[in-house]
Image (cartoon, rainbow, N blue to C red):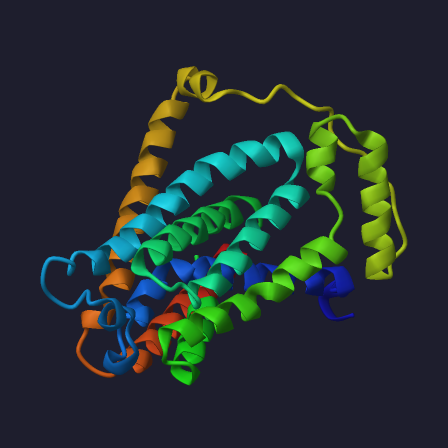
Length: 278
């Protein structure tokens, strides 16, 4: 095939894209409260009065879930493996995203969105920024402007990622190697080669080295300074990115057109960066 791309590569690409699409649920609150006659805040009376703060709490609770999921799922996947934790994270995400559209009260809605955020955090660290995914979410919300319908549509759209992880992907050979499960690692590599339609060629893996802890890294000469600079760059970039994303519904002009333009610019910037680093 062109560029030596095989079937397994295509399934990885599809899963990656649908997983990123699910992760773009982080900015769903700006869609759920945009169209006046079908907005979530209007249905639950969050427009004004004593309950107006709940409109922003919708996002805050969800991001609290993302924070918890990022920390917990990453550690859990190191112990139990990438595949089972990915299945759990995506299953929770698809299910809770679907029942978001069925929430009868705002209390249940906020509780559900916490678990949506929790699974987003798990998806981000176990399976895969979003550009094309944002474009897909924009198009779905244009077709289904009512927030309940768009929630259900987003859940169904993310379903292929879960099905591929369950029925196609084996456990990560890298994780199996790190755990010393060499026979399982070779079986996973053989399965991938067979699924891809290519001949299996055994690969000589490097000897497993001791994984350094955070404290050991910080005590390594000069490394703590580099980490501090890198963490600062990531933090600033994330703050700027999410500040723009979560307030993009206040930008003048057509809301959906603005989101499409944002999506295209993000996708182009990724391609330019990949081209320049190649």
